[in-house]
Image (tube, rainbow, N blue to C red):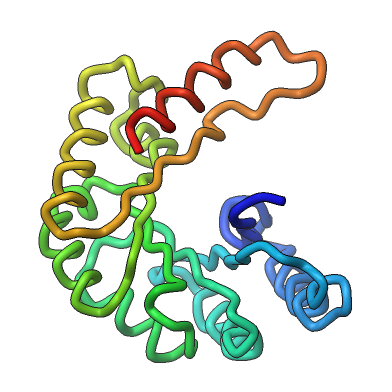
Length: 193
């Protein structure tokens, strides 16, 4: 059983299928299949600057009482997390804000101090979107991504908030040749806490 599962309504769902994705998530979280599940669940909503966030928050209102967490992408402003939490009913310890833009990185210490005061226990680094914004390869051996990673890790320690960096940068298929790379990344994540 995984520690957590994130149902992605942002990147995984094309714009013309957002409502269908929300309905599928709603139906699952209100089904007997969900009731028997033992891991922690999160819904990754669309970012606060999109037209989709209001409907995503409405979905969260229907599942927050079930202990479903909220993953909030592309956070860059201090009020975003507090606003979404107050509107959705999600408990702060079940919030996964994501720093994946230059604006979020620039504001990291202000954001982390605020999140810690709110009761948020962890945050996520979105290397993919950060790499895209920087127009660089998504590769941690590049000094700029390594600098961002280490800076976020230090800020997390200062503000006593857990830092999550996903080992799923590569999604291998059964016949994939990148298993060694995934294994190495998982070991790196394990070593870095």
